[in-house]
Image (cartoon, rainbow, N blue to C red; front, side, top):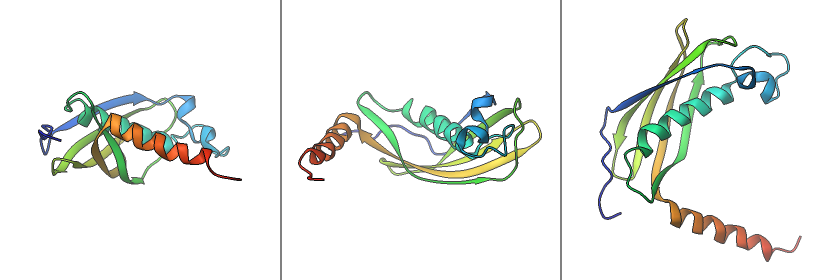
Length: 141
């Protein structure tokens, strides 16, 4: 990368989503919890907020991809409540971004997380993925 993308440490973004039936644990294999927010849905919202914060600052051709994610889902959220996610840049070295994430519903905090994203050239990443996929053609099963 010739010029470092401009990402400010301590920059942050908030997003909100009202939880729907498709966001419940029932849709992720837990038939016992048909009215509670699934951890997978919480994680997806955390990643969405992270991408919106980082990728909006990147020049054309660059994207961020997830490298590591640590999430603590602390409290249940009932179907119909609104989940708010706040994501904040904690570290940035020109390539790697470390984000702190906090999630809330109307009652209080429901989760926290740390998420590392790496800034990459989209075209080169897709080329690398395609080269890996090409290896499948030569494998004898």
